[in-house]
Length: 281
Image (cartoon, rainbow, N blue to C red; front, side, top):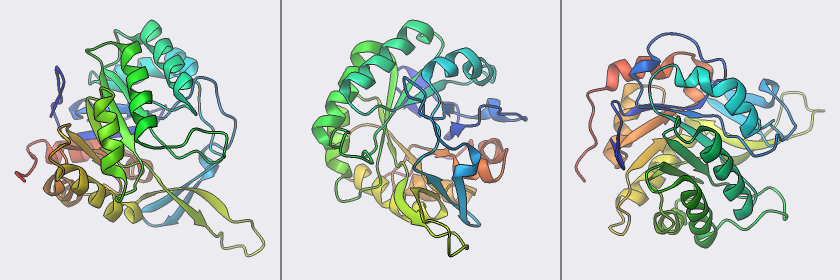
């Protein structure tokens, strides 16, 4: 997969990489994407905020903790870079100034070390955030591009909205994105077995997300106006799932929930799927 001047050696990439990633085989990956960070830390739950809804589906609670970009740079990034594959930092912010600020920080502190960033676009959970539309995506992407420069890889990760994702993708493309990722988590609700416990709101990932994410990839790949390469992400657990995404038009995939449920899965898939190429649409 070609990302600007960067060539990925493998279509399998690890997303939301564990801070304490350990084991063999990760050097085969196409790239490592970090967990999403913000400029300032956002307090909340750690691993206890991830609910296993069924065997291969997770619900990530809305009030999950988000680490700061500074902690990432100081404590976690050196370990992820040690695998010798491109590392992209996943970032999010409530508005354009926030995206500009965190991109400026990364450009100053680690611009020469990272391959680029993943701009995580999500509908805010409160009315305080900016509305997520094509204009916001374009302006946020452009703000990040202006800070990182023309050569950095910028992957814009879009929400699982098949009826709107084409417009959002065009916004990212106009803003200077290098590639698209489809998709991030789907807003959902989980009812714990304990009938007295409060419902848990959050983002659905894994098996239950895959059919929606596949449709989103299909929408992007079949729009002649969209010329960017596509990462498919959502419920990748087997080589057959990788092939499904490539058949729908993805150029590569990201593995996140599968790695959380089965540590080492992305490395194993990289060994199995390194020869795969996207289908001709």
